[in-house]
Amino acid sequence: MRRIGASPRDRGSLTGDTCPDIFELSDGNFAVIGTEATAALESELPADAARADYERIVIVSRETLVRAKADIPSE
Image: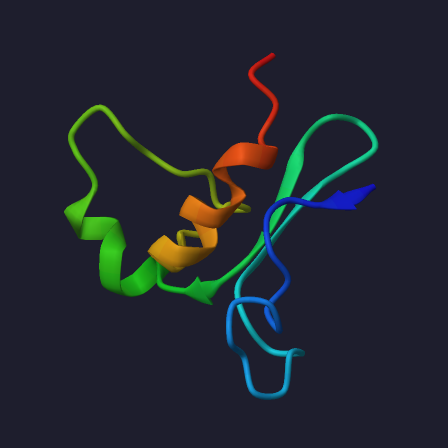
């Protein structure tokens, strides 16, 4: 539906086409493009956190999320 936050190019990507990104979907959910880090981080999850077999842990840069903050709906 729409990008949340600044585009990769606006965040300083030289090519503007392969960087973390956040999108709001038409159903209200969010899709995230980030660095896949499931194997590296799964053992670091707190005891009350878990992921399903179809879920992955993804790293999104702090700048990407901070710059998206103003665009994330409060409800």
